[in-house]
Image (tube, rainbow, N blue to C red; front, side, top):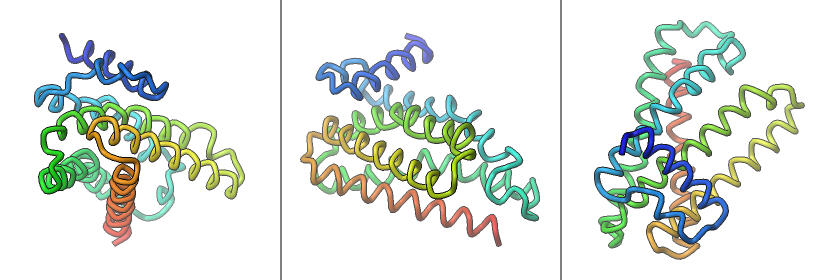
Length: 190
């Protein structure tokens, strides 16, 4: 199977997961090799990510941040987005006895990012800028909450954990994402 076939099959699995199809996990290669290939989702999202961060109306684009600095910081940040969480979960999974299900979780989580990150980035460059600030913030929050709940469902299904454990894992993911974003913004502003 080519990487493109696997990507199509896995994205189809994400759609089935969103429909709560009990056979959705059968669409993914839940092995170590499948886990490694799931990071191809980062390559699929890279053009949209670059478009988002380097368009003229990007927050902070009107400031005096040199393009080279922005490119360097974003060039370091993007791989971190895709590797920091799997690294954190590796140690958590090993510590609490989920190690045998780690590859399944990361594989499905990575392919899920096509929708969660992809749709949020698309919204940020299409219709969100045209909304009033309060409406934009409310809609962004609802989208984020929806994706966090969906990712908790992914954790519950792949790791075989309770809703409370999945919610705690997602809460930790949210803290990691916010901390990483704040650190990136700090470096950009510095």
